Amino acid sequence: MDIDKIRSDFPILKREIYGKPLIYLDNAATSQKPRAVIEAIKEYYEQHNANTHRGVHKLSEEATELYEEARKKIASFVNAGGNSQIIFTKNATEGINLVAYSWGRANIKAGDEILLTEMEHHSNIVPWQILAKETGAKLKFIPLDENSELRIRNGELKKHLSSKTKIVALTHVSNVLGTINPVKIIIEEIRKFNPDIKILVDGAQAVPHVPVSIQNIDSDFYVFTGHKMLGPTGVGVLYAKKELLNEMEPFITGGNMILEVKKEASSWNYVPWKFEAGTQNVSGAVGLAAAASYLMNFGMKNVLEHERNLTSYAIDKLSKINHLKIYGPNNLEKRIGVISFNITNQTGKLLHPHDVASILDGEGIAIRSGHHCAQPLMEVLGVEGICRISFSVFNDRVEIDKLVLAIEKAKKILR
Ligand code: C6P
Image (cartoon, rainbow, N blue to C red; front, top):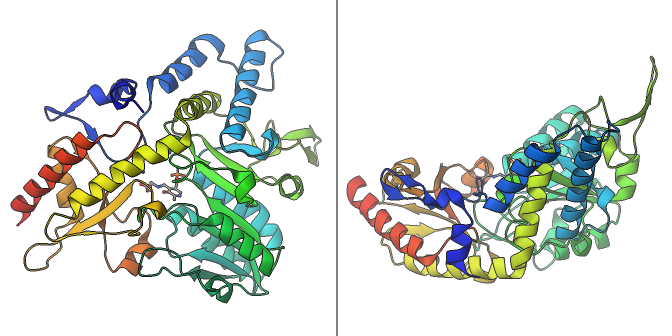
């Protein structure tokens, strides 16, 4: 990968922050956008803008075609096995809510068990908490081991499953630890235990960084979000198996998701449109397809390799800083380019992550600090907050060297 060329694809990298070149290390929160994505959205609005699936005029036809082509592109990007299993949502959060409300309300009852993990983002906890409260179901959590991986080896996964388990919802990659969960193996084991248990995988942090084949993983549901994979905000994806989508009731209702509406009752449109009520984020879908094409041009294996090289370099440099603790798996193969860390002073007192992040910001370096929408995980780690850097295709080693210097400066200031 030609990083200089890639960097020139991202207009925002020309910005200066407080007179210093921007070093953007907050891609897990939201990634920056290459020109190809910005241009695709611009061209859509300048040349093709119309409402989809409604008009018979030329522009409406073009907009509909672009929207459905985007669906095809996304289906092939994640090897979904069919276009109609791809539902456009607002983001990953909406995808999980759709499943919890639509599938959950019809299938979960009092006493049932919903199995999550201790490393979930709030998006994959709160909708299940509400469902459990409404139905009287119980939430259970797969714990972490000392290497920031799920405690599932040597038959331990089975300990968390029971005849009452109805759904397992887990993240593919942790947004805090960077851990890549072996979802394919986990799903095989769950299916062996009971093929009726449904499995939802939250791929928000996986799809932008690792090759994902949903058909190979074979989950029932898989969600991800556009803005973390170089695409625009306001568009995400829910994949679900066709038979599930056919039997599920719609989540949001209104225009476009119906076949026929009478005064008293209505019938539902075919999948996937049954789950896409109202005017859709067409420019978002077009931008997301451009982002998928951009990533596919590199090949996700190369993206992973580039980000892993950076991770290895960064861990090596960061681990030489005194009093800096890095979180996440020791084995590089088991993590992506998300590195969380905390720093203490000589007396062992934590330097507040927000203070560290503010000082780095003064150096033009954007990192995230806080609980990262994973408060249960923070509790497990015994911290209130954490500093996090996260890479994308455009990051390079020079930026990491500057980060290390800025951290040394922060340590001196906060001493
Ligand atoms: N994590 C982070 O800084 P939305 O907001 O719906 O696009 O994505 C939600 C989401 C779901 N799952 C995981 C694993 C995530 O990391 C996120 C978003 C961001 O870590 C913002 S809190």
